[in-house]
Picture 1 (tube, rainbow, N blue to C red):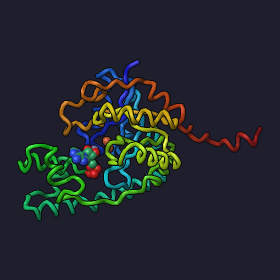
Picture 2: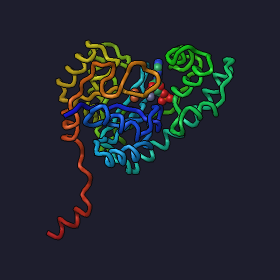
Picture 3: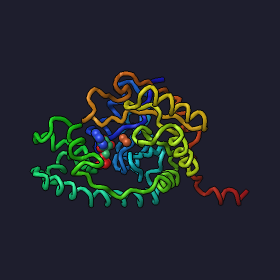
Picture 4: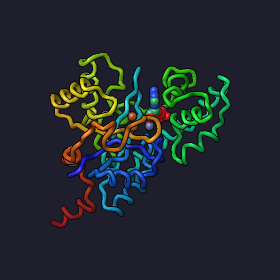
Length: 295
Ligand code: AMP
Ligand code: ZN
Ligand code: FE
Ligand code: FE
C-alpha cells in the first residue's frame, strides 16, 4: 500500500493545482490516498471527490479552519466532513464574508505604504477561488516589490507586519464543534505555529481542545523539527490521540516541497487513514427510526 498525504491545498483556496489536477498528480506519484484541506472552504471538494471516483483514487473530504488564537496561529483540520452539512455551510459562509471584508483593507494598507497594487491583480492570481495572503504575496513578487514569497510575508503580510489585517475567526471550541457536527474528525494542524511556551502549556491547550472534541494531532509536517515530532508523538500517545501528517503542499511558496514526500523525508503509511476511519462518525441511517419501529 502506498503512502498518504493528509494536508493539501488547491485553487479553491491558495494552492496552485485545481482539485482534479492534484488528485491525478497524487495518483501519479504512487500515493494511496490524499485529503484535500483547503482553508475555510469546501468549494474544491465536489470536484476532487468526483475526480477520485473517476480515476479510482481515494480522496478524503477535508478542511483547514483558521481559529482564534494568540500570539501564534491555530489551524484545525477536519477529515471526512459531510460536504452537505448545513451548519458547516453556514459557518463557512461567515468566514468567506470575513475574508471579503479583509481583502480590500490589505490593498488599502499596501497602497498607503506606496505600493501600486489593485484588488483586480490579486483576484487574477487567485485563479477564481478564495483569496488569501499568498495571492497578495505573489503579486508583490511579480511586480518586483519583494525578491521572494517569504520576504512578502516578512515585510508586509505576516501577523504584526504593516499590511496585516486581522479577520474574524471562530474560537477553537466553536471550530471543533462545527467540524464535528459535520461528522468530521477534528485534528490540530502543525502545532509548531501555536507559539506556546513549552511542553506543559502545549499539553494543557491540547487537553482543553480534547475536552471540546479534538481527536488528533498533525505530528508529521515539513516544518516540524525532529524534536517537535518526538514531543507531539509523545503527547498523542499519552492522551490517546490520533496522529496524522501531511505536506501542506500549495505549489508556490515552499521551494523543494512535493506532494506525499515533503522535502523528501516524509513517509506516511496508510494506517493513518485507517485510524481516522476507525473513529469517524458513520453517516446517519436513512429512516432508521422507521425501521426500528416496524420491527
Ligand atoms: P490567509 O488564509 O489569507 O490568512 O493566509 C494564510 C496562508 O498564508 C497560510 O496557509 C500560508 O500558506 C501563508 N502564510 C501565512 N504566514 C506565512 C508566513 N509567515 N510565511 C509564508 N507563508 C505564510
Ligand atoms: Zn495556505
Ligand atoms: Fe495551516
Ligand atoms: Fe494548510
